[in-house]
Length: 338
Length: 67
Ligand SMILES: [Zn+2]
Image (tube, rainbow over all chains, first blue to last red; front, side):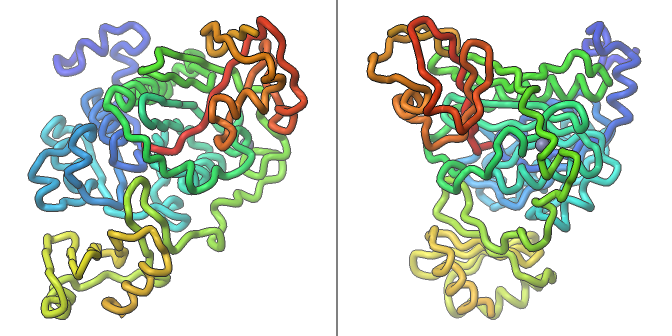
């Protein structure tokens, strides 16, 4: 028995055998915000063999209250979350193979990311991407664990392809934009509670103890002292386009891919160029320097002009801060970046 | 009437006659929800037709997007 994982191996449902299984598994965490940093730290401490973590954003001061892998210098230097997370995770456990990607996950990316993955953990902040994960999970027969939280309320559900209903069965439609971008704030215990459910379900899957899975849609409100769970097995639909008998995987269709997205809870719009090409940030910096204020790190460039700020990532994506108006964001994008 | 909602006894005005109005009462009508009444999950299209009576056991879970 290894000293490092001894307490987990003494825990009977895992044992030395379970620990070995955990060591041979590969988990994909999509999103490195509150839920993603929580799950990532727990799995890395638990001795997962390989972890892939993906995020499109960089660390800001408002993240530090609950996104447990980040520290002040990450916010000061606008370090991409994937980079900052990897650095901290390797300090926690250098034995884990950690793959971190600064990336907006859409159709093309997800098909690459899921290769060789045993489990996907949802740590995203909107339903467009969750339905994408859901279709990828069904197409490649990989379980995934939905989790979400706002305020003091949290919800989680484990989807096992071929066994449980999928997210598309439960939702029936994509929740409207306003509902995905909650501005009700969040307290960190809510995050920790959802992470507790997600990571416990993850450990059960990783040690292949499928009989112990919760199998219920679980929700709680820590402030209102409520907890409830519904057995949703009866909602599995043969007619579901994601998990039913005739599958079209509608969310893996390139034509459903969004080029712009309003970022959750922030006055910001993301623009993805239609053709992906790497930006030369040094060239861009010298070009923009006489038009506004430019700050740069190895991963991104921040350009401030009047009340607006644009952040240009190496992979070509641009965040336009200071607006929720997609057309205004596009105008600024084309004015300064061609 | 008194309902058992998510394991809490809650008094609600009698004019809340069906599940649809109950969801409005809790400001959940704009959310995607799953509602179980006395152990049976309702079809989303049946919320307005499902009458409520005193002592009903109701579970409501609503979806949120944040993370
Ligand atoms: Zn389905």
